[in-house]
Image 1: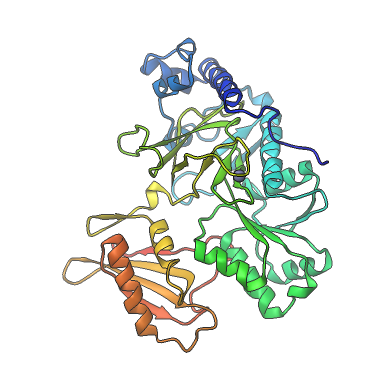
Image 2: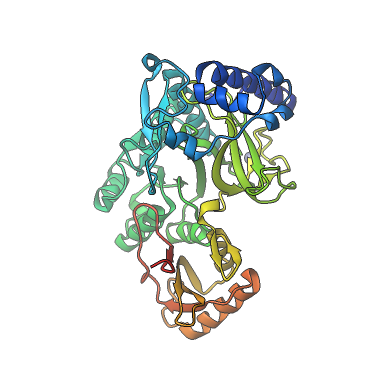
Length: 430
Ligand code: ZN
C-alpha cells in the first residue's frame, strides 16, 4: 500500500471545520503581520474576531492583482524576510510581473498538494514522469518535480521543447507519464506517430498544466497514440503554483484541495455568488499559506462549481475546467465571447481538427469583423473546404449569435507550439 496524501478525515463536516479553522488563522495572521491586509480590513470595519463562520468570508475585502503589483517585489508579505525560503514569479505578459514569496512550510505544503495530484491521477511509485514544462523562476517545473519526488515516482526533468531529446528519453528511460502543456502534448503525439515509435515507448498518461484544452484536442491526442488517459492539473503562482487540483479517473470535474483554500465563484460585476452551476470568476482564500496569504483573491479565471459529489467517492469538491479568463473576453459587435465557447462549439464538428485561430479586425465600413481559421481533421485531406466553412459559420451563428468568416485549411497548416498556442489575434486597435 503506497502512502496517501489525502487528508485523514473523510466527511464534509470535518472538512468544513478544518476550513473555518484555517480561515480564522489566515485572517488573524494577515491582519497582524501585513500592513496592507490590516488597512484593507480596517477600511471595511472587520477585525479577526468577526470571523466566526465560513459565511463570514463574505465580510472580507477582496485582493486584486493590483495589490500584488503595487507591493512589488514582495507584495503582501506576512512573515519576516528571514523566513522567506524561495520566490517565484509569474509569467505575466503585461505590466510588472508578480513575485510571490514562500516559507519552507509553504513549499512543503505545495509539494503535498502536488503529490496528491499524482495520487489522484492513479500513479504509483513505479511510474516514471517526464516533466516537459518550463523550469526556472516559474512555478511549473519545480512544482511538477517536487511533487513527483515526494510522491515517490521517478522524475525525468527535461523542460519544454527539444523534441528529439523528448523522444529519445521516452524510448531509453520508458517514462509512463508525460507532463506538459496541451499544445506540447499535441506536438509530441504527432511526433511520436510521425516517427513511428509508439511501440518502443511506455507512455500511458499525459498530465496537462497551464493551458485550456478543448475536448476535441484531448480526444485527438488520445487517438493519435492510443493513450490511456489525460488529466488536467490546475493552479496559479499566486496560489502556490500548479498542483492545487486535478481531475480523477472518472473525469467528472477538477477535484480541488479545499483543505488548502476556499473557492468562491462570483459574478465578476456584482462580486456576489453566482447561481449554483453558473459560470463566474474564481476567488480564492488560502487556509495555510504563511508568506503570502491570499484573502478573497480575484483570479480572473472563469469556471463553475460542480454541485454533485464525484462518483469516485473522494470528498474533495470539484469545479469545471478553466473556461477562460475574464480578461480574455472578446467583445465583438456588443456580444461577449469567451474563447472557451469557441473551443466547445468547434469540438462538435467531426470534420475539423482541434487547432483554430480567431482574427478580429476593423472593416472599411467601420464595423468589426471576425475570421475563424480552422483545419480539416487529420486523414481528411480530400475534404471539401467550402463545405466545412459553411458548417462552421452556421454553427457559430447558432451557438454564439455572431457572424464570422471561416477559412478552412488542411490538417497541420496552423502553427503548433511547444508552450501555449496563441489563438486570438485582435487587430482592431492597430
Ligand atoms: Zn473523482
